[in-house]
Image (cartoon, rainbow, N blue to C red; front, side, top):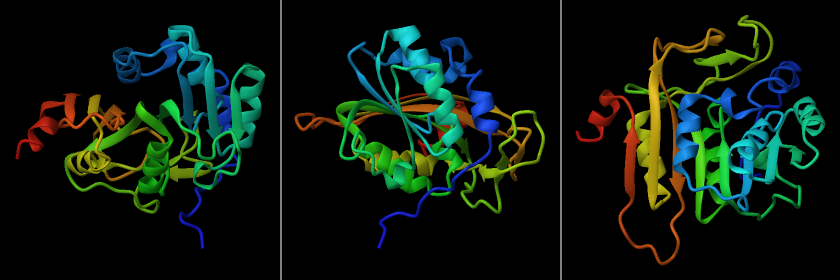
Length: 252
C-alpha cells in the first residue's frame, strides 16, 4: 500500500517551451520571490532542492545572484527536464514525482534550502507535497514556497478550481489544480511543523487568465519557513509582510 497518491503527470510541451525562455534569470522572478530570497542568508556552499523545477531556471537565477552551484531540481514533466539539461550541464535535474522518489540522489537526502515555486499549489496532493518537501529540509535549513491565499474558504478540488497549462493565455490544453488556501488555516499547518521562523510576503492580485476558479482576487504570497535545530527551544518567530486584511485574522 502506497503512503501517498502520486501526482498528475503532465505531458504537454507548454511547460518546456515556456520555462526554457522564462524564469531563467534573476530579474524574471516575481518581486515577492526575489524579496524573500534576499532576506535569506544564502551561501555559495548551500545545497538547493527545487521541487517542480520546470527547466531548472531557479538554479540559474540563484547562481547569478548568490553564486550557488549545488542545485538539484525535480519535475514530473520529461520535456522540461530535457530542456533544462540543455540550459545547464552543472545542475542535477531529475524527471520524477517527489511523492514517488526512487532516485538515490534524492531519497533520504536533506538540503540547506528546499524550494517549491508555483508547484505545490498546482497539485491536488497539497498536504502530502507540503510534508514531503519539509522532510527534505536540514535542521537549520529553510523551505521556500509560493501559495495562493484567501480570507474565506479555500479550494483544493480540481473540479472546482483549475488552470489550463497554456502560456498564450488560452483556456485550452491540459489542466492542473489551482489550489487556493485559507490564510489562517495555512498558518496553522505551517506552525504544526514547529519551525523556528516563518516569513512571508505577498500582495493582492487577480487570478490567472487561464484559471477557472470561484475567486475574483487572491493574495499571491511567498513564504520562508526555517526548520528548528535541536538546541532551539524558543517560540516561533513570525515576520509577515502581507495585506492588512490577512494579518488582522491572526489577531482574532
